[in-house]
Amino acid sequence: MNLVQIYQCLCDPTRLRILSLLDEGELCVCHLQKVLGEPQVKVSKHLAYLRAHKMVAVRREANWMVYSLPGKRSPELAANLACLQDCAEEDPLFRADRERLRNLKGRFEEESPICCSPSPLPRKPARHAKR
Amino acid sequence: MNLVQIYQCLCDPTRLRILSLLDEGELCVCHLQKVLGEPQVKVSKHLAYLRAHKMVAVRREANWMVYSLPGKRSPELAANLACLQDCAEEDPLFRADRERLRNLKGRFEEESPICCSPSPLPRKPARHAKR
DNA sequence: TTTGCATATTCCTTTAAAGGTATATACCCG
DNA sequence: CGGGTATATACCTTTAAAGGAATATGCAAA
Picture 1: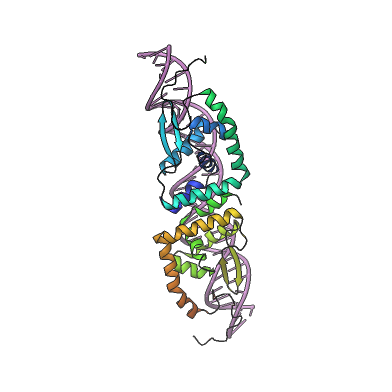
Picture 2: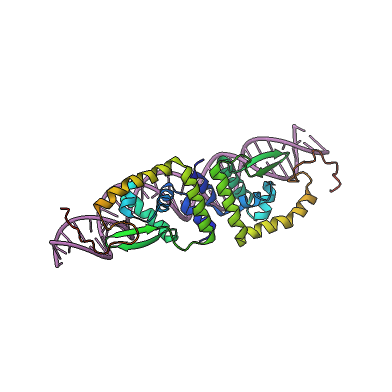
């Protein structure tokens, strides 16, 4: 991954929004969809693009694919992600996304105890009361 | 200029090389051409693109158009240009460009006392001995 | 095994950018 | 004015990316 490829990954609004959200923590596709308000195909394809360029890491959790920012980053990638997050904090659009994420997180955890719960995931949750 | 547009400007190798070179100081198109080893059209069009997005400033000096990094920069632009220059210093390709520029600069100043000479430009150089 | 859900992929159309050739513009000088 | 130089623009072709509709895959639970 050279500099140009990094910038190619960053030059789409949906991808920027995804990266900005992932800076808050890992997220599965369905939650990304809801926060972004974008159709599944669109989100999935941008995630595929980012994956192909190692800009995100993925983990499967049952039916869900949980995305996060990559642990290992080249110096250029680290520098540019840091720069992006700095800029995103000042930008109303990205701030709105992050706020929407925080507002939705409570609801997410009620709905599904598996998907996107905080790091130590309960492997086989006992509760299935709902429905 | 929002973040996405900044990254769109940065996602082409020729444009990155131009910006990296301009970090060393202002340059006219012909010198950029020579350092980059790229055809005039290509350089000119990328400069037009950067100009249209306010990523460079221009000044006319007789026949020559002298380009430089913009004096006024939004916080995002400033941050990303700084990040770019940091990364470029580590990258062999950009380092090679800068070295080529430094090597050619002496020759440039012999050839034309006007074009791209350091800031206080001699308005009407007396010498026309050559040819 | 069948069903259902979450996600990915394929196929298609549209749009934008890149690169090249040729031409135009702007300036200088004689 | 005319010619020369530096740079920009127009026009064309090719390539890549985006977005959507439909379909496929992978997993889990009944």
